[in-house]
Image 1 (cartoon, rainbow, N blue to C red):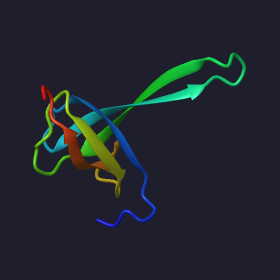
Image 2: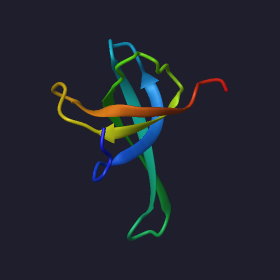
Image 3: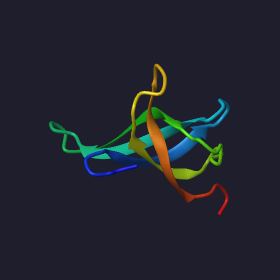
Length: 85
């Protein structure tokens, strides 16, 4: 898989109930434009996990991919840290 212009994000797996699919929660921090306060915002992405290797609590990197279903447009690139380690 070529990573030349594809977006890569890291997050925590919150669900792995579906076959070959994980739900990854990605958090980002930014400064509020008016109040100058650091704000935390999260978004969930459905990602393709071909080998079903991910479990809940794992920290993973996901990368943009071709559309695989209605909501699944990301794929698991690597498992950065397994849950409980």
